[in-house]
Length: 194
Image 1 (spheres, rainbow, N blue to C red):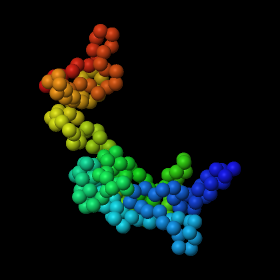
Image 2 (cartoon, rainbow, N blue to C red; image 1 turned 135 degrees about the horizontal axis):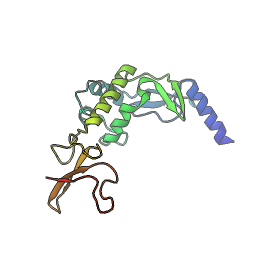
Image 3 (cartoon, rainbow, N blue to C red; image 1 turned 45 degrees about the vertical axis):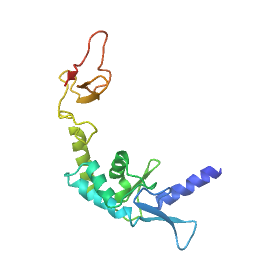
């Protein structure tokens, strides 16, 4: 019964435009001056402006996610634990609807009362840029293979990826399609050694 009451009160808070759980990075949960039990969401004065800058940078299409992350890190942006922001976390930030005031929680969608860090147009441009960048498969990697992201398999139309094996003293490109390695005694796709 207590769990149901708690969930009902959280749902009511959400419907009124408040965020029922811990706010995403770039925002802070603070107590309301009038009611200590009531908590509101405000922009983090350190991380908030840097996230707004990240959306502006990435929406131009001139920067990769890693370049945006490295730029805001140089400006002083760190995770809540004080570490360098992971690539996956930067992607998560750029995909989060919360930053333009659309809240999504437990299948519900609602406009929030919090201040936005970006607008819908910039958010949608970021999603389009991300889709375009993902399609080309170009991002900074540990090993620099010149054809990675540009070569496609003639048999199954999947992109080739590259692997480096220092112990075996070989590197090669192969199709990234799952289950392409061996079918019976015949290979479906051909490995290209470099």
